[in-house]
Length: 419
Image (cartoon, rainbow, N blue to C red; front, side, top):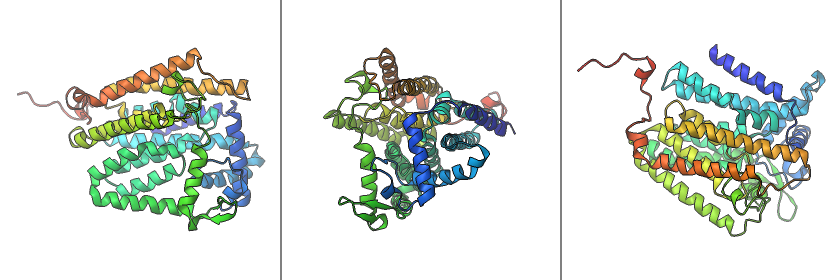
């Protein structure tokens, strides 16, 4: 009942914020896509909508369901924008449930409830769905589920969940290195191969029903060319923003600034992320047996954070999945707590600043050199250095702090007998 109350109150908070103006172009795009999918079905979606539709195919199933929900509830005074904000809000609560069950298996009800509460009441998380009107909560749910399944040695289910995540938002690619190492270490090479096959099967099944326009603008069935279809969808999204930073307050927002053609910085950004991913996976591979599951979650967090900070063409909300992984660790790892507080603040400021200026200046504005941008980006960079140092330090994992929960500190077990 306490858990239900937490979720109910957090949902009411979100409902009260639905009336706030969201990001205008995002909201209008979603409403149009909802209506298109509900009216015409999912199959011709990529043929009917304009070429700038850059959302991967799992979203179209959501658009279809949401569009039909809009039609069914319109008579009761429910607005389409409310449905736009309702769907990610429900996924936020679902992610909160995942956090609860993960923590509760290892710790007390009190700690599990706290971990859930700090996520479902997180202001940056609430702002993303209930104010902005974005769908980042959906792929975050599947990423967290995939990570948990891999930790519980359910590699094929983890791969299936990960496939849905990446078919929702391509930035889910950030988790891939950690997920691959984790499945290999937990379940062995054979299950890693099975997981790859499962991923491919789910990706094909989700993508097969669609039609799309090929290079000659002829209608083609995706089941006959799934790789060409997915490549076209993903590249449309990625190549549409060839800039240093797309309003993300990260390394490139400090220099050369926002909305600068990325050029050679594109390669440099991916090299930097590749170095970070190698560093993270090395420590995960070497220390997993001794340090345990919290190390794996920290590694996943660091890749989400690094993906936001280092590559070019990153949007302001790409830090979002990092908050969920931090909430999982807060009860167990003291050094994760300042990261949770600071990154919640920087993500919220990033979201609110961008939304404020785009409502005020509908034609767009470049915030390069703005003191808030420089300050927040610098704080994020310091936090990335700090997080890397936390991973590097053996003291974090083997001495003063443990990856496991000492239940005697929670009062669940009696104290040890005297010597």
